[in-house]
Length: 156
Image (tube, one colour):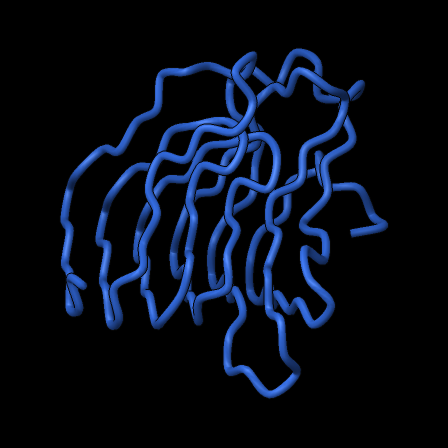
């Protein structure tokens, strides 16, 4: 449903706050969807790139735990990815969910920036921030030509 969906200059926001744990801002299942100059503002599980092919360009994505997650073939290009202050001491940017080694899915973050949001900056040294974790057995995430600020744990 909604194949070919296009959104431009829209802010998607979930105001549940970090204390309410998982609160998806957008779940996309449409094939060949394009989101351009949009903002996704949440905490845990902000952007669910659930399935099919998706393209995000010049978007801002805010979150705390697994805030870009799902099993789509998703490309995020020229995006600003902001880690927010979590309730726990850990931020995880991505959680990709590929179930089968033959699936052509994964999260690609290209020519983007991963930095601390204003609420994280004052406590950044007390929070462990990781680029991702394997959500399923065959998870794959590629991050290329992307600026990683000092908040990222060198372990990944």
